[in-house]
Length: 230
Ligand code: NAP
Image (cartoon, rainbow, N blue to C red; front, side, top):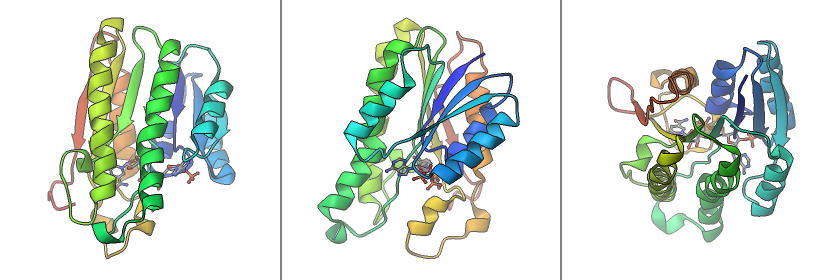
């Protein structure tokens, strides 16, 4: 039986990952801020014969991340899935320092702290999964803050991968294109939701990678709409 931590599991891609990993008596540590939404994910996990533990913390606050790490405790962890993230789409001259700091705190500082502090609980065969984006490899107009945060996480992830390889710990980077979740509610403009991927695609990719034998590392997964336009 495995013990997995998923950040941002209260909705969207994080909830889809939780539902795909649930079952077989696994323990899922499910993080989010919205208690009611997180409780819904917990019920879905428990319906599949697993244990769900909810962790409500605001990742903008490094002190809250430290408290969350304390609550997680020293038991072995089979996977840390850094999924929680926020988007910001604005021309460069309109981005405030506070918006920039929020993007960086949630998308970069929180994965940094969680990875650094939880690595001691991970042994050979364990995995770190980082939910990146096509925006970790390509820049788009008005996405500068978001792209910078994802490029930063990409560099961190690639470096940590090489640091932990000799310990048998795997680092998986997933690069989804546009996926139909609530993250788009806060993004200005018209976006063709019906053409976007479903979050379950990312859930399936994570489940596939984690189910490989310990000596096999699925290191990078690109998930793109076939039209290539989203
Ligand atoms: P979403 O539906 O908006 O969900 C975001 C999750 O992150 C929620 O569970 C939310 O928790 C959590 N979160 C946001 N701010 C937080 C904060 N300050 N403290 C704690 N938790 C916070 O977004 P999504 O589309 O599933 O995105 C998940 C990941 O996939 C993100 O890293 C995103 O960058 C990446 N991604 C998304 C797409 C896409 O098109 N959807 C494409 C590529 C990559 P609460 O709601 O409980 O606050």
